[in-house]
Image (cartoon, rainbow, N blue to C red; front, side, top):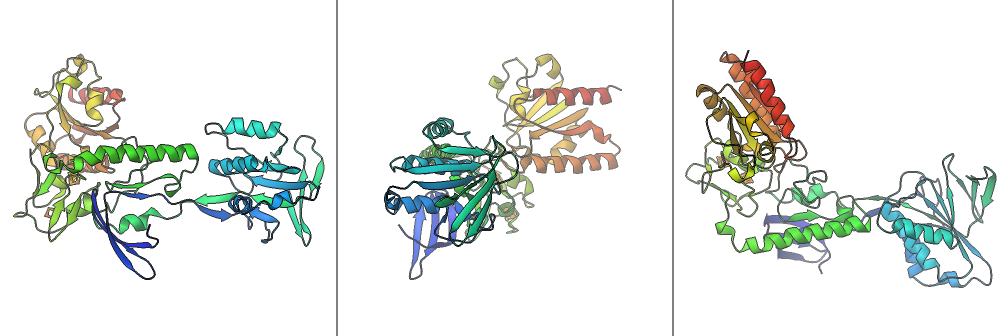
Length: 465
Ligand code: SF4
Ligand code: SF4
């Protein structure tokens, strides 16, 4: 294990070149994958309670270390020791903090004459087994005070701390002078992922690094293929979520490994060096960080998701795919179990993202699609505005372009790019005297076919009049 800081990262999934600096040395290491998996940054709530540090006040993790360091609690000389835990007071607490608190209560079971008290607002039990563990400790004598009204106050003096509070059930003022007070902590990601990703020259510059809400990413994935962030490194802390993150990364890594040896067979964009003008637009725009610069722009086949965005945005037309099918995909008729035919010339063109719109179109009754021609795009971001104009010149009554909902686009901003191109093309249509409302962009998902049906109805009501 090397303990140091990362100073430079280059390369692609399967082949990351990482430079690590220690105070005395520099290491150049190759890694297939990069997983940010640091423990959470724990910040004490001492200030929030206006307390000064003392050997009577601990944070949860400090108290855990205190228990780990020896068994001072067993030196009780026949007297009871009282420990007051503060949880979810002075700011909301994380579920993993409650797990830590319960594991401390588990540890305290071995000591005699130790009485724990939990002062709390809201216990976080929404994780497997926590509710049962909480009930267990309550039944064995741990005292829980749950506050709806004013917070309990901790008064610190030279002899220790006094807790002043109104007992929530009895409504009576009470005081407790515990031997120790243990405060939960504010947790945060240990590092900002931005510096790590920004260190990789080919990492997407404009993309948010994590897509926790997107069904297209597994949550721990970043848009840079082969770079992951798990557990606290991305902001989730309870053990169940951490295990789910690790499983998700393992699935992704195991899926990628066999592909590493078959890169040349993989469909991917490539740059024609005879046409490239070195403007670097493609490197800046690739949402998957798949294009690097090694004396000229080069696409990493394994990282390329074939969204077609670079192909559309390259001002020199220098990027292609080996099968040249990134513009419009052949529509798989198996998707259309309702028997709808595609590829026939229709009054209305429906240009759909193959990841969402194609599935949605496959759920629509054939009669509603009788005069609709469906064209599938690898990603809405590969929509070519020229093809829209050409469709109108060829006699289309109207065009609907459908892209994934924002936040759920596999190419992060592919559908946003498509919407912008549709807006621009609508302006061109208006200048050319063509009703711009004959062109519409809609956001959808594979399970929202109704959005297409509504758009077709809107378009027909305009064109039929
Ligand atoms: S966008 Fe096209 S011209 Fe510009 S660097 Fe990339 S391949 Fe070359
Ligand atoms: S096709 Fe998409 S993923 Fe592939 S290099 Fe171009 S922009 Fe990147």
